[in-house]
Length: 380
Image: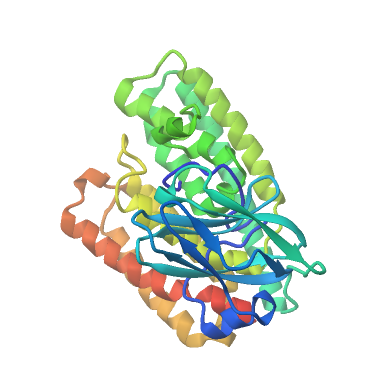
């Protein structure tokens, strides 16, 4: 999950197109009606967006953080649905992304200094006629269909394993619940950009204790993780487990109903790598169970699944890019395997500083070519 609970909606898959880093000047100039990218100046107290409207279609944003806090930038549709986002923008850093805003209407932009709260919001209008989200390129259409099937299958497995997990918690079978916990969560982690897209379902299912700072109750997987590993099952653990199953059931239905577009696959792949870099590699995500490497691998697998669906198109459009992704992906996979133990992995607390450094460097190397995929797709 992102460092704070998202009160909204649609990172990768849903309605949205996730973040894209590394877009070229040519790509940016081709968006926003030929006027170039929309620039955003983000500070600790202001979010200045250079234009408040754009024609329907692919819209490019370039976000510069001139403040002192790590920042995020979001584009929201009605109902706080995330159409696109850029996370973890460090002070002094500039990030770019392309978002598909296919339907005319009212949207919002938001900067989130410190990556908390609802953000500094402003209205944003998409004008003109509806722009078809599906590419005419049959390879991209096939890629989208393939990845949607992947999301559906992972969603079904997530619900099935969560059902088992909840039953174990309610039966007081602590050791068995602990054993299933990282496996059940891996299905969420593989499709996290989609799973995070439905408003408060994300923090209710995957929020960490910090959600209370946002005025929410601490529920979901991480609340039960705390009960299982740290506090012991509590009088309300069964109630929390029941709520988890209700929330997951709702999320799975939504995830299986979403319609994606090719840019969402590319941006979602990079978003998963960002999740690995900001939460899993730091050991912050699974602070009680220390099962972060299960999450790390699952995010990696999900990222590869999105790229794999795009592979036929990418091999024609940029074969060198495919080779770089393959090579660096193989290196990262080998490094992850070094920490496998039985059917799972060693605990995060067993990693040495050198282990973490090596994983971080391999992840960064893999993320670099992946960050350019959305630009290639946008040109297609």
